[in-house]
Length: 177
Image 1 (cartoon, rainbow, N blue to C red):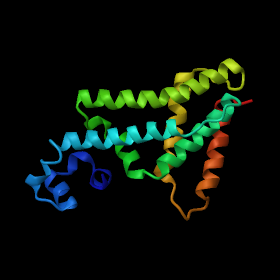
Image 2: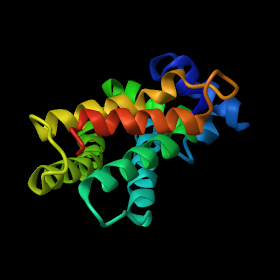
Image 3: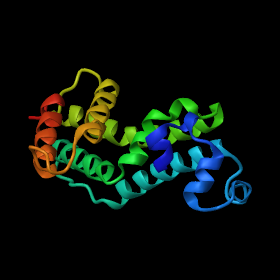
Image 4: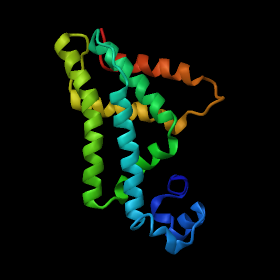
Protein backbone atom coordinates (compact mmCIF):
# COMPACT_ATOMS: atom_id res chain seq x y z
CA UNK A 1 0.00 0.00 0.00
CA UNK A 2 2.80 2.39 0.87
CA UNK A 3 4.49 1.86 -2.52
CA UNK A 4 1.28 2.38 -4.48
CA UNK A 5 0.46 5.52 -2.48
CA UNK A 6 3.98 6.95 -2.81
CA UNK A 7 4.89 6.01 -6.39
CA UNK A 8 1.60 5.12 -8.06
CA UNK A 9 0.37 1.74 -9.17
CA UNK A 10 1.81 1.92 -12.69
CA UNK A 11 5.31 2.77 -11.44
CA UNK A 12 5.57 -0.06 -8.91
CA UNK A 13 6.91 -3.46 -9.99
CA UNK A 14 6.26 -6.84 -8.43
CA UNK A 15 9.99 -6.95 -7.63
CA UNK A 16 9.68 -3.75 -5.61
CA UNK A 17 6.67 -5.14 -3.77
CA UNK A 18 8.51 -8.37 -2.99
CA UNK A 19 11.52 -6.44 -1.69
CA UNK A 20 9.26 -4.24 0.44
CA UNK A 21 7.63 -7.22 2.15
CA UNK A 22 10.86 -9.21 2.39
CA UNK A 23 10.27 -12.13 0.02
CA UNK A 24 11.72 -13.24 -3.29
CA UNK A 25 9.80 -11.98 -6.32
CA UNK A 26 8.69 -15.50 -7.26
CA UNK A 27 7.41 -16.16 -3.74
CA UNK A 28 5.11 -13.16 -3.96
CA UNK A 29 2.94 -15.09 -6.40
CA UNK A 30 2.12 -17.54 -3.62
CA UNK A 31 0.19 -14.69 -1.98
CA UNK A 32 -1.31 -12.85 -4.94
CA UNK A 33 -2.02 -13.74 -8.54
CA UNK A 34 -0.67 -10.46 -9.91
CA UNK A 35 -0.34 -6.73 -9.26
CA UNK A 36 -3.94 -6.09 -10.40
CA UNK A 37 -5.25 -8.55 -7.81
CA UNK A 38 -3.18 -6.85 -5.14
CA UNK A 39 -4.57 -3.42 -6.07
CA UNK A 40 -8.11 -4.78 -6.09
CA UNK A 41 -7.63 -6.49 -2.71
CA UNK A 42 -6.30 -3.26 -1.16
CA UNK A 43 -9.23 -1.24 -2.49
CA UNK A 44 -11.81 -3.84 -1.56
CA UNK A 45 -10.32 -4.15 1.92
CA UNK A 46 -10.63 -0.40 2.38
CA UNK A 47 -14.24 -0.31 1.19
CA UNK A 48 -15.21 -3.37 3.25
CA UNK A 49 -13.67 -1.78 6.36
CA UNK A 50 -15.46 1.51 5.65
CA UNK A 51 -18.86 -0.14 5.22
CA UNK A 52 -18.33 -2.38 8.24
CA UNK A 53 -17.28 0.54 10.46
CA UNK A 54 -20.28 2.57 9.28
CA UNK A 55 -22.74 -0.20 10.10
CA UNK A 56 -21.12 -0.67 13.53
CA UNK A 57 -21.47 3.02 14.40
CA UNK A 58 -24.85 3.80 15.95
CA UNK A 59 -26.44 6.81 14.28
CA UNK A 60 -28.56 9.38 16.09
CA UNK A 61 -32.28 9.02 15.52
CA UNK A 62 -33.67 12.49 16.21
CA UNK A 63 -33.55 13.88 12.63
CA UNK A 64 -31.64 13.88 9.36
CA UNK A 65 -29.54 16.92 10.33
CA UNK A 66 -28.16 15.00 13.32
CA UNK A 67 -27.53 11.97 11.12
CA UNK A 68 -25.76 14.18 8.55
CA UNK A 69 -23.49 15.58 11.26
CA UNK A 70 -22.80 12.03 12.42
CA UNK A 71 -21.97 10.94 8.85
CA UNK A 72 -19.59 13.88 8.32
CA UNK A 73 -17.73 13.24 11.59
CA UNK A 74 -17.54 9.52 10.88
CA UNK A 75 -16.21 10.07 7.35
CA UNK A 76 -13.49 12.49 8.44
CA UNK A 77 -12.36 10.33 11.37
CA UNK A 78 -12.36 7.05 9.46
CA UNK A 79 -10.43 8.44 6.52
CA UNK A 80 -7.96 10.46 8.60
CA UNK A 81 -6.59 7.23 10.05
CA UNK A 82 -6.07 5.68 6.59
CA UNK A 83 -4.44 8.27 4.35
CA UNK A 84 -2.65 5.79 2.05
CA UNK A 85 -5.75 3.61 1.61
CA UNK A 86 -7.88 6.66 0.83
CA UNK A 87 -5.37 7.97 -1.70
CA UNK A 88 -5.18 4.61 -3.48
CA UNK A 89 -8.95 4.09 -3.39
CA UNK A 90 -9.58 7.40 -5.15
CA UNK A 91 -6.52 7.86 -7.36
CA UNK A 92 -5.97 4.35 -8.66
CA UNK A 93 -9.50 3.53 -9.82
CA UNK A 94 -8.32 4.18 -13.38
CA UNK A 95 -5.92 1.23 -13.11
CA UNK A 96 -8.54 -1.38 -12.28
CA UNK A 97 -9.75 -3.83 -14.89
CA UNK A 98 -13.41 -3.29 -15.87
CA UNK A 99 -14.66 -6.15 -13.66
CA UNK A 100 -12.63 -5.00 -10.66
CA UNK A 101 -13.73 -1.41 -11.23
CA UNK A 102 -17.38 -2.52 -11.26
CA UNK A 103 -16.94 -4.38 -7.96
CA UNK A 104 -15.30 -1.40 -6.24
CA UNK A 105 -17.80 1.02 -7.73
CA UNK A 106 -20.67 -1.10 -6.33
CA UNK A 107 -19.14 -0.86 -2.84
CA UNK A 108 -18.66 2.89 -3.22
CA UNK A 109 -22.29 3.27 -4.31
CA UNK A 110 -23.43 1.38 -1.20
CA UNK A 111 -21.60 3.88 0.98
CA UNK A 112 -22.77 6.89 -1.03
CA UNK A 113 -26.36 5.66 -0.77
CA UNK A 114 -26.11 5.95 3.01
CA UNK A 115 -25.49 9.69 2.68
CA UNK A 116 -28.04 10.09 -0.09
CA UNK A 117 -30.66 8.43 2.13
CA UNK A 118 -29.88 10.90 4.92
CA UNK A 119 -30.27 13.82 2.49
CA UNK A 120 -33.48 12.44 0.99
CA UNK A 121 -34.95 11.86 4.46
CA UNK A 122 -34.00 15.39 5.43
CA UNK A 123 -35.78 16.72 2.36
CA UNK A 124 -38.92 14.78 3.36
CA UNK A 125 -38.69 15.95 6.99
CA UNK A 126 -38.03 19.54 5.96
CA UNK A 127 -34.78 19.60 7.99
CA UNK A 128 -32.48 19.65 4.94
CA UNK A 129 -32.79 21.44 1.61
CA UNK A 130 -30.62 20.49 -1.38
CA UNK A 131 -31.57 20.94 -5.04
CA UNK A 132 -30.42 17.43 -6.00
CA UNK A 133 -29.65 14.70 -3.46
CA UNK A 134 -27.37 12.71 -5.80
CA UNK A 135 -25.27 15.74 -6.70
CA UNK A 136 -25.15 16.88 -3.06
CA UNK A 137 -24.00 13.38 -2.04
CA UNK A 138 -21.10 13.46 -4.48
CA UNK A 139 -20.12 17.01 -3.54
CA UNK A 140 -20.21 16.36 0.21
CA UNK A 141 -18.21 13.14 -0.02
CA UNK A 142 -15.58 14.86 -2.17
CA UNK A 143 -15.41 17.73 0.29
CA UNK A 144 -15.08 15.45 3.33
CA UNK A 145 -12.54 13.16 1.69
CA UNK A 146 -10.52 16.21 0.67
CA UNK A 147 -9.49 16.80 4.29
CA UNK A 148 -6.96 13.96 3.86
CA UNK A 149 -5.20 15.71 1.02
CA UNK A 150 -4.15 18.76 3.02
CA UNK A 151 -4.55 18.22 6.77
CA UNK A 152 -1.41 17.61 8.81
CA UNK A 153 -1.18 17.24 12.59
CA UNK A 154 0.56 20.18 14.23
CA UNK A 155 -0.82 22.72 11.79
CA UNK A 156 -2.73 25.88 12.53
CA UNK A 157 -5.95 24.00 13.39
CA UNK A 158 -6.39 20.78 15.37
CA UNK A 159 -8.13 17.82 13.76
CA UNK A 160 -11.11 18.35 16.10
CA UNK A 161 -11.40 22.01 15.08
CA UNK A 162 -11.17 21.14 11.38
CA UNK A 163 -13.87 18.51 11.91
CA UNK A 164 -16.14 21.05 13.63
CA UNK A 165 -15.67 23.58 10.82
CA UNK A 166 -16.31 20.96 8.14
CA UNK A 167 -19.44 19.73 9.90
CA UNK A 168 -20.74 23.31 10.00
CA UNK A 169 -20.01 23.71 6.26
CA UNK A 170 -21.67 20.37 5.44
CA UNK A 171 -24.81 21.30 7.36
CA UNK A 172 -24.97 24.70 5.67
CA UNK A 173 -24.37 23.16 2.23
CA UNK A 174 -27.25 20.76 2.89
CA UNK A 175 -29.54 23.62 3.93
CA UNK A 176 -29.91 22.34 7.50
CA UNK A 177 -32.63 24.09 9.47
